[in-house]
Length: 66
Image 1 (cartoon, rainbow, N blue to C red):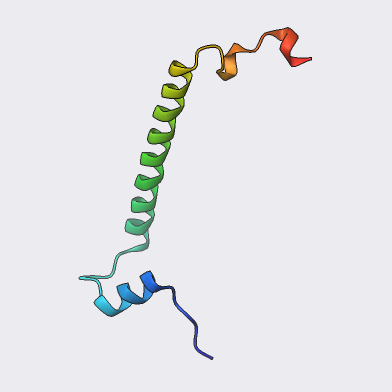
Image 2: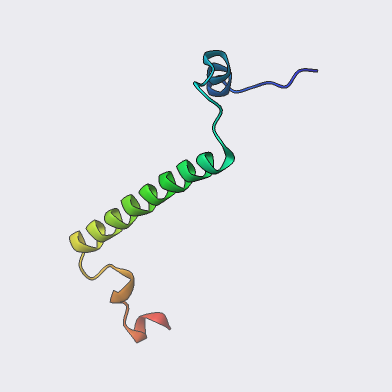
């Protein structure tokens, strides 16, 4: 039985990359993508906290936690 590939993987195999990428190169690319996503999410969180004062995580008083 043959293994089924998703469309993206099949297209990459058909196109063939210019040169095989090393494991470290692939991990570096994934790491860079994750860092960009974290930066984007932090910016979004700061924007939301700025636009909604009093609704951020640090706005709870001790009485609210009971």
